[in-house]
Image (cartoon, rainbow, N blue to C red; front, side, top):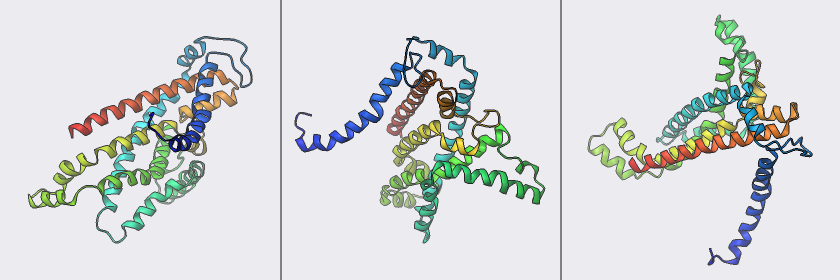
Length: 286
């Protein structure tokens, strides 16, 4: 570090300053306030671990956490499956591959709130009309139950992010030496064998990156949840981020919400770090 040039630190300083002001300092202040009765303006009493003890007794918070975990597991599996599938499709020698890449990636450019309202219209109005026309009752009343709300969020998230995850897999698929594939073909390996023994091991780093991104993003979803179901019916599709925001601004309980945010951060960080650790080990084994 001592050998770094002055220009290096000049370029790095704005980034470190921005990171400190936006992330590090607010996080430290939030951690301190979580042990008090902070109301957003002042903190008049130190409560110790009371807020943290209370949140573990909070049934609504626990329900939101369990719903978020279920959603994240399903979303991570489907997103990586779809992302890899789309990447394998568009890296084949197709005349329309560039067009398909653009189409698949476009939903990621649309904001979460707008996507939520678009899919809300599709699930409520379009599905209902199709169900009525075809006599399929299961398509009527979407988003009115916990199950349909859950799958509605999964569909929205997969539609939005699959193209983005596709790009990550494409970057690694295109770096696979063609000589390896050709040698495997000469040796008589079929498509599945080439995919299993050559493609999968060489794109293992992409699995690590994609799983980290999809896992962290799935846990932190807020705007799609807000615009699609708003946590309904009866908070049954409420995710943790929304529950924390409601605690802070609807109930005006800032310190308690901050304690929830700290615990949520610890849980997501622990899961993400564990996932990266085991995926990195698997990269070596593969």
